[in-house]
Amino acid sequence: MKSIWDEIEEEIFDFDTESFDADEHYDDFKKYDIEKIPVYIFMDDNGSEVARLEGPQNKEDIIELLDEHINK
Image (tube, rainbow, N blue to C red):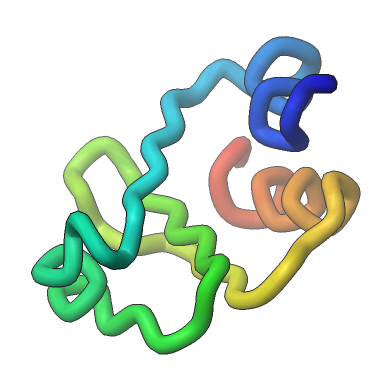
């Protein structure tokens, strides 16, 4: 079964994703002020945060955010 991210990457948008384990990348979690898991942080090509979703999300909510903030 494909993950939501796999579906979005293949079917809808051309972008890269990365995931991090909280135990292995604690410094990154502090750097990005992550307090809830899961968290989805969307960054532009310059590495600036443009949007954030916290907590479980469905595919439609992620696509809506991408339409509003990323794919202008």
